[in-house]
Image 1 (cartoon, rainbow, N blue to C red):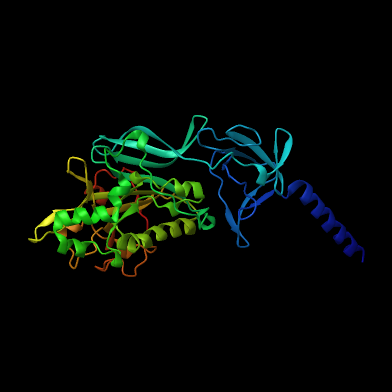
Image 2: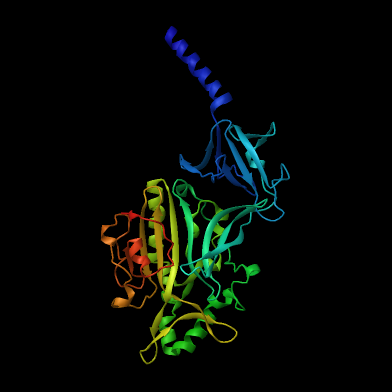
Length: 408
């Protein structure tokens, strides 16, 4: 009997002690976020990521653990401090302390929704003639990069985009939000005198294809009922990021290229999902680099191939090339392994010409690539895999990531 009494007393003491001193903080994202959530960084200046706990998306912190809240965007600030940034420490539950005053986490809101920014950061590309553009978060002059885009200003096309996807947080990512419109970044003048929104419009695509191929072939190459039209093909996908504002920050035209929708929503989408699943499985950060390459050509009325462009500029010059290929490099820096994946942006192929093969296919040795129909010549898009070094022989603009083994 005495042992039972002692045990019960211990349980009561432990529960009281844990509640008062050691339970830490737990923020359930579905109900505990402020009206305009700030970005949250750890004391090591790393983005804080949620995890799935009992089917809930949760941010967990230890007692006394410090985090930094930031409200990027011109004129934005935390309403409880009237400053763009603040450091708070966990007390318990939803209670946090700032300068010896306690606050409930749901009250720690930004004045308005946070907003990404852009800045140029030197030259890039194999010939160092393109411009590196960073998309990220600017707070009090401190810029935290999310995506980097190597952009060719002369042709108004990206050579590649690059970002880190966080495998430890993707399973608990924001979902179900509305998709924003794509943005041009007008203040840098990346797109001459052409409206990119109008360039992607179905009416413009029909006009360009009719002019280039004639009405009969234009009807074959553009058929919305079969998803045969040029979509804004994300290079770094919005679903590669955990937080909703960071997903929204991917909607820039420089992070996209004209891609047949049947491919964008077909095998390319399967590859994007497979990369995220791999990051989640490995519980690691993966560097993902994606780009378009070469110009798609389709047979004209005489059978002679004609290059495909999305639109024409004010001088009636062909403008915004439709890529022949989309490629993606997946790099695991922790193991020094990587893989290159190539998607052919031509849903009309019935045979595979030699000029569509850029490198030796190694897909058969890759365990995490979905095998169903990826290598069939279907309208969903032909996919193959290569070592990064092998693909760089054909696409020298791919950044050098050093000596890497195959990411199998």
